[in-house]
Image (cartoon, rainbow, N blue to C red; front, side, top):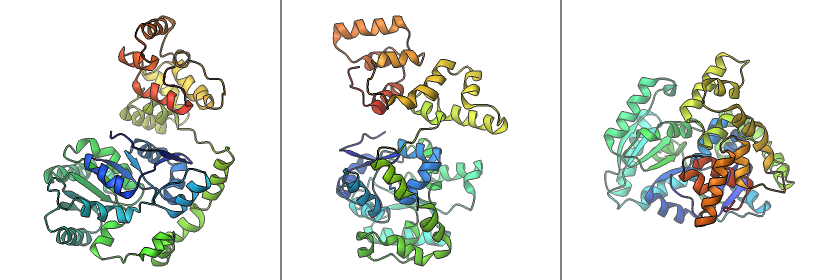
Length: 377
């Protein structure tokens, strides 16, 4: 995963990278997955743990909304620039148009629009930059054979950038699920309706509308039947949630499976297996099934399910070793050995625990990050 640069802005249950568009474009030369949240994304992120997991694992989370831009100022964490998702993709291919090592595969749109987008982009940049396109059929994500076909097409193109326009959150989830099967792809861009804009099938809103935060109104007027519910019902709670954050009352607890995956204690496949089993046995709890599989101890599950969500509220923090002991991830002898090595060589407690193979790096990072603990605990 690509490292984050610069300060990050906490907004509800996500962290925004406080980057300018120029900074982001330069860093995408090294690759990474970009997500561009707006109010609609944030409301979906309150209810969709899988979508939230994608956000937490993305390399760059940049503001695609004037409303979020202004909200960051209200929270006292001002974002330096709004980076529109619709503008980011054309800015990306213009920025790298002379770099022959950067090529693009477009996934999404209609069969006609994606071909038109390919032709127009290649004409603009003056070379064969878009090297592959595909318009998947409706509901393709549910069919293994179709997804295998798409992965094969992308790999055959040897494109280095994948731009996916399938709608939110389908496009982000698809990228996250299949990106490890795409060895040539370095940069991953969920681009929404951008393929249709690039093809000319949908007219772009005026630049001034984006600058003052009214692009949503233009889209609503263009597609009222599809979008009225989003803007007038689904997005309304945002103001209330923002007020809760201002009053330090906003809380979002990660689902247990997601928390354990982030702690590197369960794999994505293990979580999916347990969720599938839980769907068949609705009376069974997630942790109960994990213990039954022999993957984690009951005390570890209890710690992350009951104690961990409360730790950030405690003013007096214990040493990292005590938390790891409470989670049954270290015993007294292991803690003693780590403290001895720490006294001899001055290394960090968590670093020693990870290097000895006793605790996953994800667990140490999760504890330190979520409780703002000093790195030398």
